[in-house]
Image (cartoon, rainbow, N blue to C red; front, side):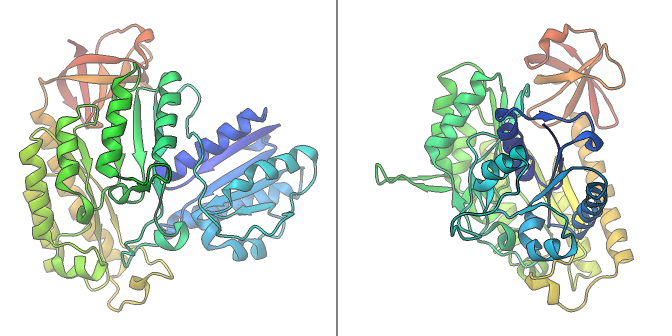
Amino acid sequence: MTYFFETYGCQMNQAESSSVEQLLSERGWTAAESVEAADLILINTCSVRATAERRALARISLFCSWKRKRPLSILVMGCMAERMRDALKKKYPILDYVVGMFERGEFSDIFSAIESGARYQKTDERAVNAAYYFAASSYQSGAFQSYVPIMNGCNNFCSYCIVPYVRGREVSRSADEILAELDTLADRGVREVTLLGQNVNSYRWDDPSTGTTVDFPGLLRLIARRVEKRDGIRWVRFMSSHPKDLSDDLIEVLATERVFCRFLHLPIQHGSNRILSEMNRKYTVERYLSLVERVRARIPDIALSTDILVGFPGETEEDVQATLDLIQKVRFDAAFMYHYNPREGTKAFDMPNRIPDAVKKERLARVIHLQHATTSSIMRERVGKKVPVLIEGTSRNDSTELFGHTEYNEMVVFAEPLDPSLIGQFVDAELKRLVGRTFRAVRS
């Protein structure tokens, strides 16, 4: 039997899709060459923005129309499935399965039913929203990079964010399970892993066997010791970090344990203290800048990326200017920039003084223009540097050229023929010039 996956949203969704694909593969399923040829279509959905939900709903509607014409199973999972479970079942009665965020343990039973030509029905009293299920692995076959979820959920309840309502409260994965997955990934040839969580800094595992507690810096130290004992994984990174929880102990781990990339994603969201307070971010601009100063004092060569949200209800031109001023002051290497998207059920949804869409888009355009100029300036300063590059594959524009990325997540294309056997390996490179936002390099 064949399947086809469509995934929307964040890295955690991608990791969860990979874990389900692995389960299907272990059961003998194969990936369909196209969505039209699949026996099972899985849609992993996102609820962070309305646009992602609209795209997923359009695809669900299309696939349901196909199901009326040929045998086909359709499964919707992810945050939108959790948020809109009953509405989806009512709107699309032909839809086979809507699997909420806390029902992932039922995938095996669902797939068994599809394989037998039956329809899965619960046979016990397992409650919806019982517990989040961490898969043993999120590995994609043949990949040199892999995501490793270490926790799920969020306790912060930022006023604009739907995540705590669909993913629930924070729950941390066993440190032993995380280390075991790293061992498996190393055996399979993975060279780089990204630890995932809505707020990795809140990781906390209470080991029932020893009575001890492992926090995030402690977990990173365990990972560093595990990785250095064997060949394979060379780079470890993580996201996302909430500024209010990033400790000096974590900074020290990043400074002293070289397996961790000199790259830190630290979302600021806005440059106005008034807006940060309305967002319920629990820090000020001044506190954030102090944190950045401590990080850069201890790790001078670190690259910083961030998230910036504009157009929050009540935002003024002065607030926008404060954000632009912050970008100039910090000089982020990169940023994910977006405008406010109302999410029903969040506190901000009912706030007055919403910003018109046209104004939000104009403000966002200014932020993007400044950040792109900042990124280009920083990248130009790196021309001539010698850096390690993880080679990922051949260039789409020229099959004779290999491409990869630096530990700062910068794209690199080698301007010289290299042996394809280097794909999946680290190569020392000299960054010769910058074309757009891609370095051209030669092996050094």
